[in-house]
Image (cartoon, rainbow, N blue to C red; front, side):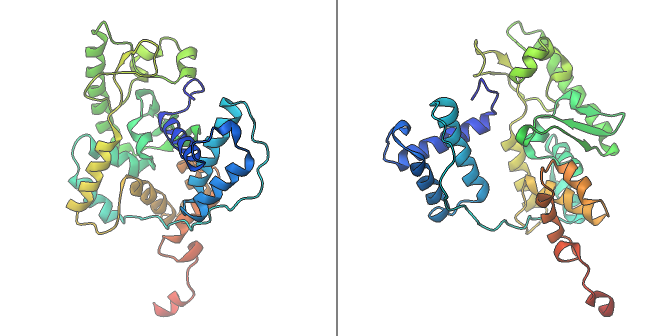
Length: 312
């Protein structure tokens, strides 16, 4: 999986499901199990564990990788199995005043990260993985590459953040100059395809992270345990948002992802076309984006109740 460029999170998740699958079948070797064993496990996840559809799909992808790519025993077409149908939750959304109250509780660098998540609809990992060359000041946008599903997209950037972003670039540059004086430093982490295509990119400032970690670390995926500077850990941002929600007196179960939900909902409320919102969020299917029509104040599917005019 490493050689194929899979992310650390995907590798960790796939290994979890492979272990779960083997243990479910009493530690029998996967080569001795057939497609009916796979179906039994997937049905167990749906019927007994009540996992979400996406979770069941991830488990299937992990097992398919095990057989198709590792064991070289293609699964082929699976018999019918019970698919998870757990209803999706309506996303939690903050109103504009709540977003403002939350932002006021945050300090550097989490304040700027939260502004980017709300202002550009970023996921938490997209925010912490931003690199210097992802920022386009001339066109007020961000070019995202390290995204869910590896689907690059261009998103809007609030022009009012340019000053704060320039200051953050200066912070990142100071780390960069210090690191380049370190003879053991081997540059920033790059996916395999990029490192082959741009051999000198790892030591170029443009490819370095916008929010660098305070400490150097070793890259476990490199052949010689290369010394690199990673981005800040997402857990610190998640904790800051959680604490900020409490400080702001917000009663909703809000998290980092709530800022992305709020971005989408507020765009729709301001009259943005749902296709535009879909592109900004990077959704493959517009039906995924349509869930935000359920949380705007005009009712289901964005329909204005005819009773409203009479009540006014």
